[in-house]
Amino acid sequence: MYMNLIKELAPLDRCHSGPEMELAYEKLISFYPDARIINYCSKQVVDYWTVPPSWECKKATLTDDNGNIIASKERHNLEVFSYSPTVNLKISLEELQSHLFSDPNRPDAICFHFRNQYRHWEPTWGFSIPHNVRESLSNNTKYNINIKSSFDYNKDMIQSDYHHQGQIDDTYLFIGHFDHPSQVNDGLAGCVAAYEIIKRLKNRKTKYSYRAFASVEIVGSNFYLFNDDKLASDTKEGLFLGFSGINQPFVYQQSFHKKSKIDRITKFLLSIKYKDDERVYGHRELIGNDENIFDSAGYNIPTGTLMRWPFKDYHTDKDNFNNTKKSSIEETIDFSMQIIDILENDMLVEALYSGIPSLANPELDLYLSLDAVSGVSGSSKENLNKFECELREYERTYLKNNSQHLNQFMQNILRMADGSHTLLDISEKSKIPFNYTAMYVSLLGHKGLIKLTGIAK
Image 1 (spheres, helix red, strand yellow):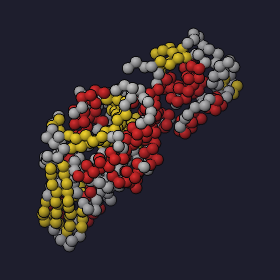
Image 2 (cartoon, one colour; image 1 turned 30 degrees about the horizontal axis):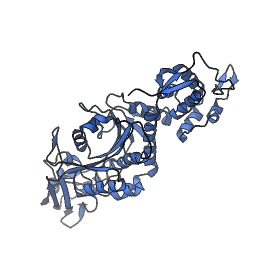
Image 3 (spheres, helix red, strand yellow; image 1 turned 90 degrees about the vertical axis):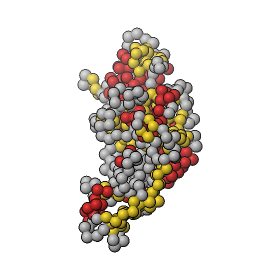
Image 4 (cartoon, helix red, strand yellow; image 1 turned 180 degrees about the vertical axis):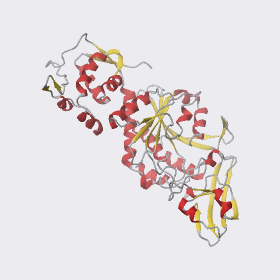
């Protein structure tokens, strides 16, 4: 099961390019054998981004003159800066300070120093240590730095994706970044959630195509799009999955122009899941990942971010397997599958009647009552049990607490069935879960009152 895969991948030194990153990708496609590895030539340059060299660090230690270990890569990958060059020095604390990284706001955490990965042409050596440890360092000793590392500028960079082919090539992309040494929710958990989505679509016939992409953050996404024109043109929208396994609620950062189908669907689903709790933000308003590479000039692939927030352990050693919940990842997968269900099943609704049908007539028996009218209590709460419908628990709870919407929903359908409105249009206006709308419209269809037609591409 995929939690074992995450546990196996979590401790690896998944820098942008290196032997343990290669091993991690190999393990990923071994678990998802229909996925593929993609190679990128070491000499390639795209938009001034260069393929990063392969970096291997055999040893990295920081000790004082008494032999006390202050930092050690063997203890934790984050304790040395990724892409640190070879160094063998003995220096004072004053000289050392500019090569230390810590966060006073998270004094017990080992923080991720990622800058070298984006400036590998001028890497600086250094160590990440808890701020409490940094403040305890003494001026009365020298510090020994021993880093043994190597750079291979002829090694290709690799990435992976996983594809589900639909009836048409128009593709929706689920993205996570696969790098970040020894961290789980910043990247890895989202990648596995995305790959699980594609795996669960395997035996399902879909209209659209879907793809999961496990990227080398930012850099890799540039090369991914540049090297495959058809993939870039087929990809219509994207969704980045962030911090997927932590115990926090969802938030959503919209695409740049806030006009994508996924923007609309996700906002609608969150409005049902969290009701009045506003959980929608602007593009990269909280934090940024690969979404801006896809949602950029020239590619124009609207890409939002579904993530859990807040994340106090972001970019630290506390982002680990122990703080990762399968139930949270499953909820991320399920929420993404709901987005797919709406993409697949949203259709135009067209009336086969004029006027207003008497839905209370026993031949139809489709009337949804008001809670109360003219002082007489209705039975709208019974509407929840009147029709069989597959709903998630949060949708049932929502309808139970908002049964007053059902009568207006019924009226909206009868009026909006003009051939220009879709199931999602009706669901949004009525504040009713999409599956309930689809179920009720299908009942109207069985009675010969309504027909559904496909949305033009």
